Length: 275
Image (cartoon, one colour):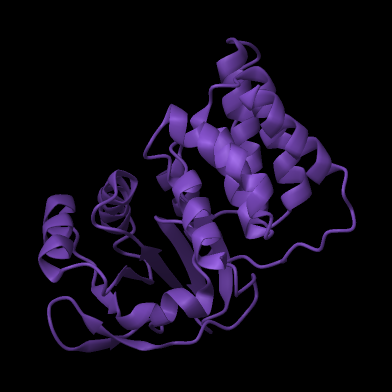
């Protein structure tokens, strides 16, 4: 029953052309927008502009108490080291709602060497409209947003690296496309197919193509109705579009399968704030 309710919600949304969806890359900023270069406090003391004059500016929003955030801190530490000879500026951003001791512990665990900036009062978070944690944004030398990459468990660092290299002119559009859409397994069972559809749905969600994202999420759930991530993505898309009533069954389904499912928790938080 639970699965059928979520799938029916998807069908209704996929068939509705009258609902306007935000076209933003973050909730309040789309690809090509100028990113305001706020000056923030550093975890280690002093202050620093959010963005630099490098050819690529990479910024990571994270939560020190979140498993996925801690994993991405480690991945980006390794990637920053790998791209150390390139003109790339890296910063990690965290809300001042977290105790500095907790942030410092997460940073130390990851071996993070990039500056960690404290977003006082979630000012930067609010200006960009960050929906998920962790999430990575990439801006060019002129501080225009060129990419937005929400977290996903498969090939996350590979995709972020490809986006940076494309901005730097180190790879072609075709090579970027190959990184974003690696060859898929011909067979391997419903779960493999479900993961493939979910990955496509994640990419479409990042591009704010909500109807198509819901369509692929429905395909993922058709092959694996117990995929917490797919339910969570449905919840987040619907919550982002302001349909918290429609999002609730997906939130419940996702959290029943995985109490820590990040997208479902983000959707739940968005809907709570909307009340």
